[in-house]
Length: 507
Image (tube, rainbow, N blue to C red; front, top):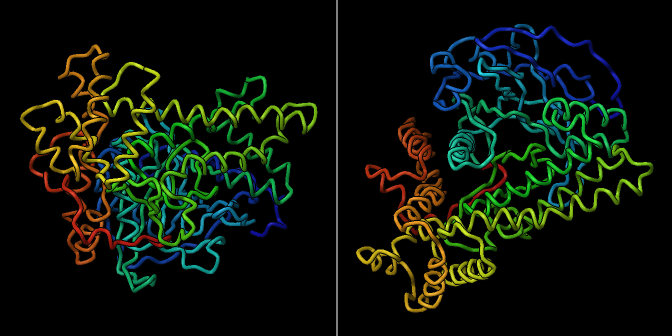
């Protein structure tokens, strides 16, 4: 599809039923201006490697279903569901701050939308199953390395309680794909309530198709924000919700030490999900300047900058929406959008403080809390303290039997005493029993995270045909807050070689 062909209509398909679910496919029923129908691509030697028990249960599927027809053909060969073709959607985006007028699903194909017996709606995509009209001269494939990372982290983030796209299954093949080297091709079957991105709106706005933009907005309101249909200004209400959800998501990322790596507007979810796991990482040593994507040489998406980048991206989204506000003129609409966007900083700050208080065992709110938290983070950064282990072990400071072991992991234990005294004084205002407070802290401070070296070790074994470490990580990371003594080795500090792992947009 070219940008010069936005008006070609297509009558809606009869919603198919098949493959054990009710298929609705509302996005595929939109006109061709919104998507392209890619040709099926061969995927030799396709086989199911792993599947998510949690998502199988949500969708009512078994491993046997996913390993057989029609699922195998839909996901790995692009076969239609009961006659309804798969589609790749068009969008644009600001990539590292530079606007690119046409991007789109270059290696993802929307199988369709399903409604489960429980009434949930899920859009299902295959990622890595071949080229589309938006592949930009690339092969549209994914490799086992990147697919394992997305498969594991999607379900891990969900277990951490962070909004995310989900991974249903991982497929391997005998296909050989060239990235930095020759690698095995793979496909991830992923799911989300919606795959709409900021970039979808940018495409129609900047291409000059206001009627298509309005159609997309109507689709988003009906599909993702039906509660705003009767609002005084539905589009402004939608922007308010997107802003608030994005603020909460950024607070989630900051609290758990997660770096996305490529926070372009085309990688920002309209519904507040973590989407498109390319170069991502959970920090080891705390560093607000941490950059997980080695191609991000300017550090635009460094860990500490992510909340600000999200606000910048929201402004880009608002620029596409203000013309659709119920306002007498554009100047009035812009003025109405300003307080929505300005509210983001306080929304993020409040959400972040809630999470950080919980990590420190603070249930009440006091004015000195933010300074206590900021001083702690500054000390952690100065010493390079491991972010996840520090918070997980923090209750041990109050336990005489384990306190010494905790302090031994700090470079200069005596230098921490002043902050520790302030924290203890702050805890004196709390009313919960110590054991209850410690349990609450362990419920928000994970013991297990998907560190880079753990993912790398699982990938290397999988590339040799051994999926056991992928299966073990999936099992352990699905319960990140629980003590799992048999897998204690996965909670240790990273080895020295972990610092040499480099991630890029092909990761």
